[in-house]
Image (cartoon, rainbow, N blue to C red; front, side, top):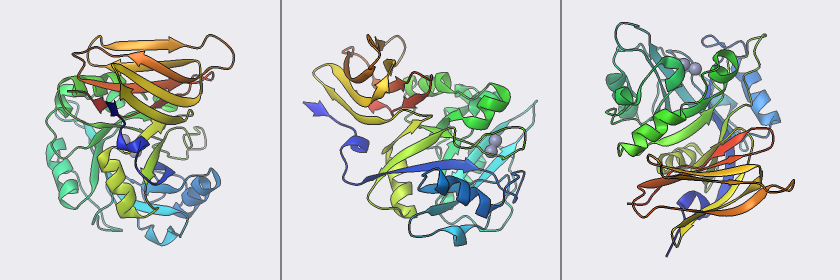
Length: 298
Ligand SMILES: [Zn+2]
Ligand SMILES: [Zn+2]
């Protein structure tokens, strides 16, 4: 039997987007119009504005071929208590209004979810958040596994161990690559990490529903064309790669390395019978990575 996640089997198109961006509504140095101009020029189809504690009023910048999604980043920094940044996008977030933090991640995530937003944890590694702190946040659909500004600015951009710990514990969350762009003159932090969403059309409901279903992959460069599970293997079609990894719970992982300069564009890797999930990582010759969402096997 072949198991192909809907990201790679659903009818629709691929839409590239950035889900975490700041603007002059908070500490970003570009206006919303400048932000939209940048992402349009880079070939993106959508962007979510996620300013600190305020919902940027930027919906008027949407057009037929470019979607602006409202959002917010709620944060609370208390080194002796709870430190977190949480992002909500879409739904009925109040445009132009401030959204103060409650001081509790679970409570803030619930407020965002109650407004119909999709909720994910921002840069857990940079925040110093453990998987244990994220395990019991029911409203959370995903975590940032790559955050561009935390990578180039602080060398703490990747939160893959946190993701695997959550998945191994049975918490089904998706992994998101984002920019968290601030547009500072001394740090280029835009165009670094994105999601490729498989959706029927470029509308906010279609993009948000696809994200909620996990119908996307994340990338800092490579393309994942196909992923499927068949006869005890996970198979991958991708842009030329120097390495392809199948990552699961605990030690259930395997790797394929390119044997020649053409790289790998198709490979199947073995699975273990007791493995609970598998996700795929594709690495290109520049060290850039694409991450599929997990396929649950049990
Ligand atoms: Zn943040
Ligand atoms: Zn941010």
